[in-house]
Length: 283
Image 1 (cartoon, rainbow, N blue to C red):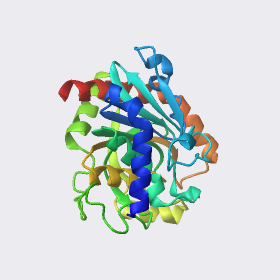
Image 2 (image 1 turned 120 degrees about the horizontal axis):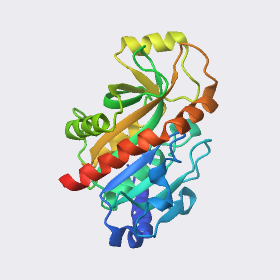
Image 3 (image 1 turned 90 degrees about the horizontal axis):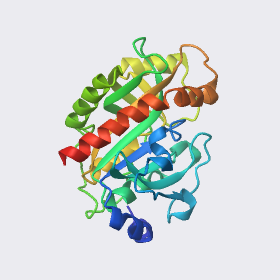
């Protein structure tokens, strides 16, 4: 991690501190493919009557996203009475960004005071028990991107050189999410997420290889963000919306992923909204 990057991170923090400071958000949401339109993300969810939406391109160190279904904005909103930072969309390695760029918004939100990161993504189900429309809570991940946001010299002010990744997805938050899902009548699955580079979808042979390694779902995001968040000491919980059956048959590509995401936004919004409330009450 270079001194130039740390200077850029400080510049982004200084740019957003006047907005974040008075609100003191401790929870951040990252809404993946097709989920940026979730009801909780609407400005109407800000009971204070004021929300601020900032395009990525206006934040130092953050380029615009180039992916359909990722609005590329960071918003300061109130979710169920809780001050929150929400990202509609994210940056990906397959867009050509370096790992430092992909996790820059995560590091920035933590520097602004966030203690809990809630990650969401669209993923392909690798096993028959995961069907299109299911929500899977991540119990663990397999990093198959062949890179890490921690490459290079370590920035001791952000975290230790060799962070432990056991329990990267917080057991208490996962248990809380399972309780909330049951209360809302949502069947919340659980499984291991394989993070790959993309952007191509997986071949049947690759699906078989992923399953043999213990993966239950596959996607092109999340793992680097989770690593960066844990490196800085934030707690992480993550959910995959299963939007296609990876490698089993053609379900229409990215357009079908977006359609499946849009069809499930109400359930995902209910789960996340309830989790935000529970986190706020417990801390």
